[in-house]
Length: 171
Figure 1 (tube, rainbow, N blue to C red):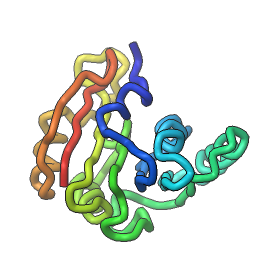
Figure 2: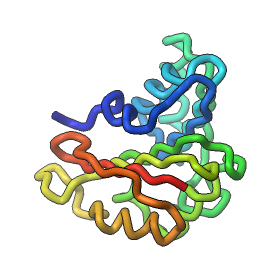
Figure 3: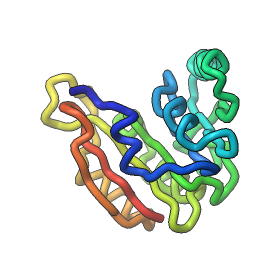
């Protein structure tokens, strides 16, 4: 099975009213599923560097009646680059982004900046055992070391499909 956002989000314990930040939101599969789970009183901030993807996500969300997604054009590799307020997020999603990051330390620090104390970060990325993996990879062990260095604690690891690993960190 390929990586399934609905299954992976079960690891985060999303609830009504939560504030979620989806880093590298892309096509918005995680944002849309998260928006359904946090309800009308919750909010999903879909952050991406590609404006066209954000506009498409805005359109899809609107067509599904989801008005709790805010698209944010931002860069998660810079401290403050997500344009998300400090300690805003109850939960952060970073799916299929680590392998693209050029400044991993700054990325992890930005995740820490936007996550509330006690908040959680879901990391889903390409496994090194997948024949579909991109050439540049960040292994689960490297991801764990990166987030622990930034002050997170690993809560759980899980298989996130046949081609991905999953990690949940607590701030």
